[in-house]
Image 1: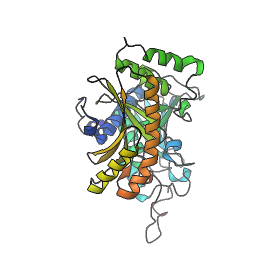
Image 2: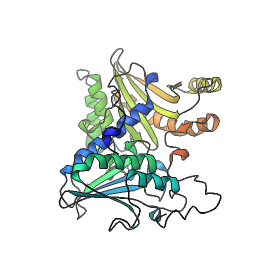
Image 3: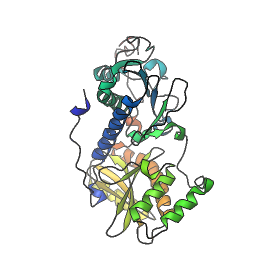
Image 4: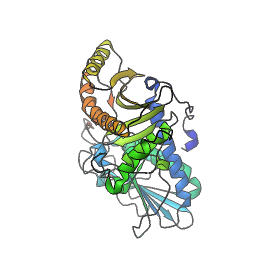
Length: 363
């Protein structure tokens, strides 16, 4: 199971309309970029370095359940990885037999099999196989632990003394110090950072795309160079449990802020009527269905661009996604971007024979 086995990469074409945006392709590409970044990072680390990857519980709603993978670089180019097992998960958030089987199929040894693994699933390989390991780790976080997008991961690279090691970003995953940070306009003006960003964004000489990236980087508390732009040219922002995309258009000058509200939904007349009613009641923006995904979109004028308008659009979009996904899901089904059905734990029904804890003691 290697990175070479993944589907062909989608074409890097900037789409003309957000209604044609393929959410699956965007998410697939984001995971591919995360795996590639991890594969590049691992061989550069010295013995004793650790990479801790965690599904952000503040976004997933998993509470005290921490789904994580820890990677450690050993001498002689050996890499060891540990994935959390059920012994470390609270009741109600433990993996069922199918999920455990998926971990073993990916290449993980059950807890206790790999020396020193304790209650965790273990895996040992070499730096030469970093690409394969990155693929396994990515699929574990996505398919077993339920992370919908790498932006919902937080990571920390450190040495044996817990001192941070500075590295290139792992695609859209968040560096751990920002795990508790919320996207808010109220605390952005520390040290005049917001004021400087607003001043730069108001400069008409600077291209619109560059001004937008400056604003988004400021909101994300990162640098422009560290922003991740997908093959559609969209900037992805993770805010709470919502995923927001920002796209810049040249003709006419426009910034489109849009977010997936519901996926895998069946387009029906009732759905279109409901989206039309909701759109008519919205002060700005619109709701629409394209390629079995319900999207929300708020345009921001690119001519006489106002940075505060973009910031407010992102905040409004975040609130809109959080409010509407539950309502529409209850009425029309489908999947929320990070809803109950996508969490690793919930609603795992026990087998009729009641032997769900007999798959192995590692459960």
